[in-house]
Image (tube, rainbow, N blue to C red; front, side, top):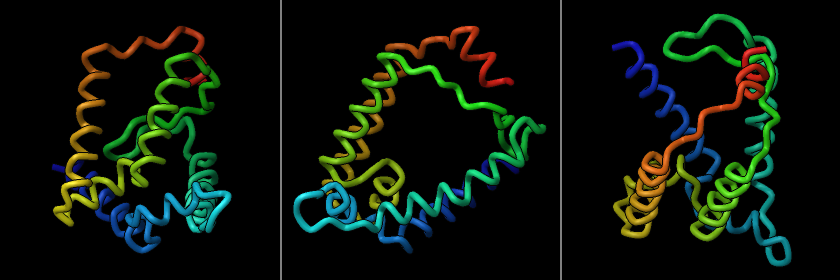
Length: 149
């Protein structure tokens, strides 16, 4: 009961933050990517705020025992960059930039009942299922060691 409740509360807080920052408005995201038109820096401040909050928390909690409902936070970030990472990040970025929505706001926007957002989330789920079918590669010993140290 604890993990689902914690997950629900975290999701609710995340959805509230997205709405408060107006990140559920595709025009905000597309405006951020429009460098040569009417550039909207709002997303940069939202990302900066998230990083400013997360970095000190990660620094304090890294390597400690697993938090309630979570996993151990790695001491180091894995620095392994490969073709799959580049391809995945590219697909994510193209979808995000084209739709003006990333996965979190996409799920929040399902509440609007708009067909565009239903299609977006459906495609997102299809992509996750395709990835599950293709198979996630196992991390190399170096990547596992870097994540644990």
